[in-house]
Image 1 (cartoon, rainbow, N blue to C red):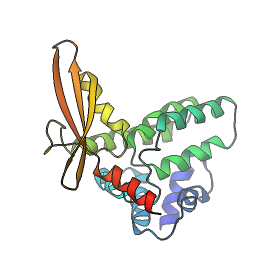
Image 2 (tube, rainbow, N blue to C red; image 1 turned 90 degrees about the vertical axis):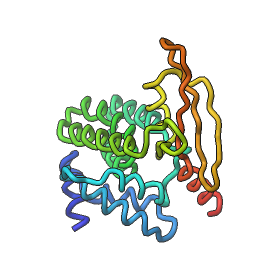
Image 3 (tube, one colour; image 1 turned 30 degrees about the vertical axis):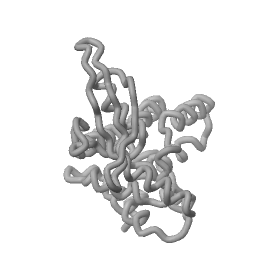
Image 4 (cartoon, one colour; image 1 turned 180 degrees about the vertical axis):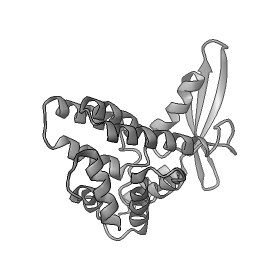
Length: 218
């Protein structure tokens, strides 16, 4: 069933073989990880764009996977490279973009930048699919809190997600780190240039630092 769903997605993107989706998993093998299997199984369910898809669960599983590297993850840089290769008519780039998006499904920025890629490639089906995924992931991220206190801290899966929220409030003028027991928080002070007020935004980055600790122990 999994291979069939993967094939459906790959066909929707560009009629590539189902081996594409497997590359995302095989290229990161570092021993058995039950979260990898659970994550990919859930991502497979998104291919048909079900109304009740659990985007929040996808994010929760992603931070437990063996390939989760939040401090190295840079969707903007990745798609700058993909777009350069697209302009150079690299015949392999669509395949690599699809594999990248499959593996990093839980990162909304990846889907945001992919839309420019698929628009330029004149591929409306994947364009609409990644619009849908981006929206669902952002809503899931927003459901984790409003960032206005430690108790209501938002839970990003990559650092750049903090700035998605911060930009809506103004300009970041200071950033610090705080701990509360086992929890780690990034605290951003954001200045509203019009109201001349400063707002404190809280982000729970415990999962990001846990991933760094796991990687260091390997």
